[in-house]
Image (tube, rainbow, N blue to C red):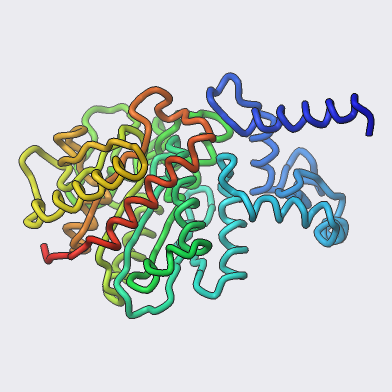
Length: 384
């Protein structure tokens, strides 16, 4: 290859890198997102082609046989290997996250992939279980309940990678099981990739003039109807647990706490760098073990400063943000009686906000790993 060819190759590689490193909607290539979206459903405008799409190589095939033949080829295997080896260099689409974790469960005997239910648009809600011993206590971590908070699912993927691939995580798995749900709102997540980067809710149709419910306002604990006739980003739905995502989570969580010793619940959001404690419904409303949780949160805060050079604020949800009924953290505290509960707002504090460059995935993922490491080391759960 001559110099011109090498320069062209380098230019193409840099162009692809810039495409993955989304910073602002106007500068993000929508062609890539449109292509990725075709991996989830057949393309009705291309009969016979959309059904035979390789999501790893972004290529169409004329038949199932042609696609099967391609999947045996060296280019396909190289593309799959690159994704499996480094899923942290871009904000992955929902289908890519599912495929990645399905492959992981097939390769690693400690990992189980479980479908919890389906969304309004028919996408799977799924959980990953990482365990060496099902008699151990459980730490539950979930994310992606708000569609636009892309750093949340990416940080959970980083945590999963850490748990299954690093020697330091052996001590975690000797003490705890982990349940991880990276994308609690897949319909909204897909929509935020394809159409509206700032979309927050799911994609249900609760009434003719409204699209979407805020799943994190739809849990039964302290649920409140939304004031007015509009359909705001924080719309709580027509009733408590009206949404398929909420219903699937309630069914799964109740079965989990009835059969396992669930000791901690962390729900991951963005942004603000906040470690928040219950309750979220009104001021001066605290669980009985609030002081114990505050001490644990301060330990997490100190470790983040010392080891990650990251400063997080600690406090009650209402004191640090606002009043919000129907949240998953209040539900896990009141209905599930899980002793240790935190709602976490990841980086940053406003420079990028929801539009966090992909170059922050690994640094912010390390924040989540640090929090879990502190929990494993320091957690001494008490009854509520």
